[in-house]
Image (tube, rainbow, N blue to C red; front, side, top):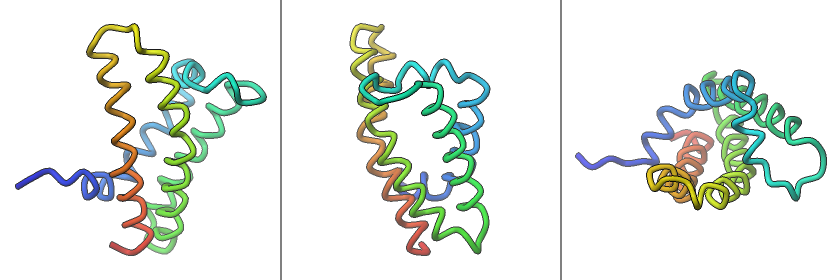
Length: 124
């Protein structure tokens, strides 16, 4: 059976967001580094705000009554953090090849992640 990334992300959206949202508070410096410097304000503010948003999306997706709203919120969040993923790929362009591969792989993975979130929103 072929791996369907959209289904994988749809089924695992809540725990993934819970884990990454928590990491924003446990190791914020990692996320601070990939906030594009063109954004106004402090990088840490973006790190903490996106951590709260990820935890909120996890909670919304996990509960049946708020699952559809959580799916739409998750899709918006994933689209909103895409510039940080692009910036990370740029920053890591001179790192060892495995790290470059991780940074670059994150970019196309946004598509099935957003598709999975929209599937959640549509009740799939």
